[in-house]
Length: 124
Image (spheres, rainbow, N blue to C red):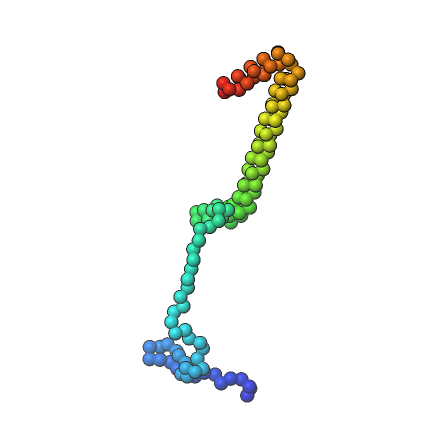
């Protein structure tokens, strides 16, 4: 018991509150209120659904779905766009190849057919 610190004397003030009698043994007191600097930045795009769901009172399922399916949807749409671009490129190359073969093999009839195809393309 001799190794324990001496408890601080507590005094009751006239207004009914309690305080420490000895300021040296009192707990650490802040001299001034603490200033908190808060920086608010725009949320990243994939959190937009999350903020809308939280703001409108929708449950955690909508928040989880927005966080999970948002980036997944972007990835799927990117893959679809890449596939369509590849197919369009292949179609253009194959059409060019067919026109070139028809021109070289067909003689005058092939040149006339290629000419009519190019006219039809220009009309569109």
